[in-house]
Length: 174
Ligand SMILES: [Zn+2]
Ligand SMILES: [Zn+2]
Image (cartoon, rainbow, N blue to C red):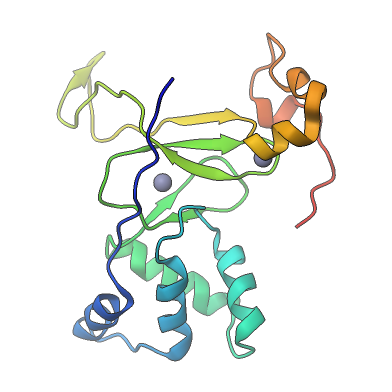
């Protein structure tokens, strides 16, 4: 299927700083750097991943600050918190364009994808009023496929339900 990768759109660090200040929040250098790190990041990082990147350049940052800042951004609707069934919530700066997600069951990479979803908010299906549609396509990303070679086929054997749980696990290196 031919699907287009979406362009990540998000408020600039300056706009976010103004927005935070307008709502009485303090913008510390750590927070400002979190705003910057999220710009154009289509990898749907977890809070832990943002913390890992940030603590490499700033020793004064805590995981708590990262959680708090991401939580506030999400509650302001500036980023999305996305639950794709991985251990950690993932954060998505792409709030503009309706999209779905591809998830690698092996390395937990997450990528935006546009899929033809016919259900619009407000429609009714089987008596359910539709608010939003989250579709997660689980599979193997190109780099895991390359790693696994022929063994990739085992991950998609017929009858394997819940790929992430039942497929051969390799030791995860973080
Ligand atoms: Zn992968
Ligand atoms: Zn996304």
